[in-house]
Image (tube, rainbow, N blue to C red; front, side, top):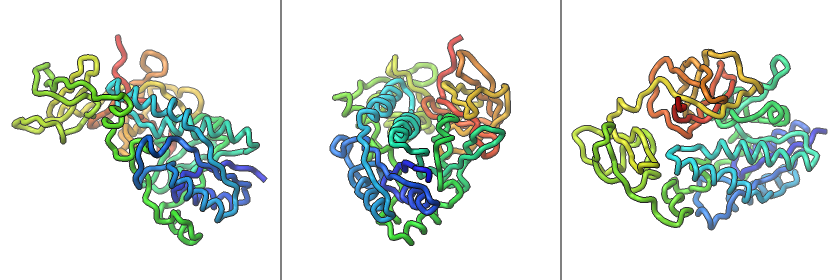
Length: 359
């Protein structure tokens, strides 16, 4: 009998994943990763992996009859996720920490712990599918397009795909909730996580200032020519495409079009200035383990749950960077966000949107 370490966040998805695997005959061990202290980040409904969620996961594990453990990964989470999030924001980027959590915690640290426990697989409640084709493992979008989470799994390796189970990939969310309700799970109707777990109120700037021990310095709003338009309250309070909360009066709507942490400026412009057809992606991970022959035509998703754009992807310098040329302009391509490449419903690879390489 194959043994599976099931990551249980306390939500309905991972709970049903554990139940389905138990029904399929796997020897399951439920585990929740304790990532932070509630009193450190605050708490409200809509986050994940809190102390309340641990109790929900424990209750489900007991109900389906599998052993359950809590692993304290707070130090790993601090170093690999929170630190990267802070450094990204301070560099002017808008990072996605959920991707780092998957990369460094679920499919690295947790998989290491699974091996120590003699487990053959790690399982999660992600809506995506793993298959095999021509001797290689593939990652494909979940069949429920509204819940597909293949985007946040682009950093997985062949070795990780070989030892991962995603039992929800072919199910709609409605059926997952129905299964949970039929089994009497306490979290059958629990709200999905919406916010970054360690920023439960969604106020990223306040979180950064709390960690920093003070406010970021005010600076200038400028236009594309460098003319001063007013004063901003710290560049970490703004992201590309933002219109609300600027506090600037103008004849026409203004949007954040760029940030310069070194100069402590935030550039404002019209909506048209936010559209682009060319951008660069660094640190690219190719799911096959090697870079494909390029240039090649792929679909690219530049933000979680955003539309996909047809594009030509070509190599750039330095190594590990690609140039993406979209067929149609996209709005607010944001450094720090992931760009994930698809061929049909198959994830080919992905990386982090970055500034244009220096010539």
